Amino acid sequence: MEGRGKAGSRGDADKMSAIEQFADSEVFRAYATYVAVVLLKMMLMSLCTAYYRITLGVFANPEDALGHAKGGDVKKFVRRDESVERVRRCHLNDIENIVPFVGLGLLYVLSNPELSTALLHFRIFAGSRIAHTISYLAPLPQPGRALSFFAGFFVNCSMGYAILSSISYF
Image (cartoon, rainbow, N blue to C red; front, side):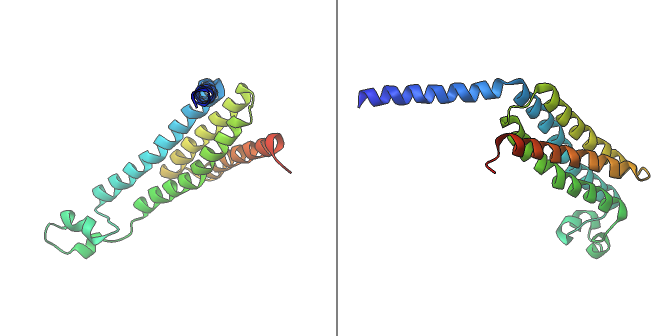
């Protein structure tokens, strides 16, 4: 029994060493940095939506409008506004693109890419999402928003292709 405990401890130490090695890798640190950037940007969109709702007095639910109505008609505050909807659509677009980036990016890191190639993927994606938000909220004329969207989309496709090319079971 004692021998097993030692072997188990050694196995646990080897596993920890592998995890620590992975966490210390330059590619993983780059991934973690850019994931943090785009997730924080996505979270900021929630605050932008709240800001627009409060400053414009536009709410989705009657209970949210109660404080704004101050005893008046709550229904006039429960409505749609193009400015609020624009921020919401931008936030939804972030969710549709950043969530796949987080998953694909982690799998991409596990495929052991070159640091320079990984940084290129991560930087283009983060830059494209920031540019997309600016072009959506400003609003800037097309094709600016479309180009920034497709830049991020193609980064996700490129990482997906790299994953399938390097570690697939096909």
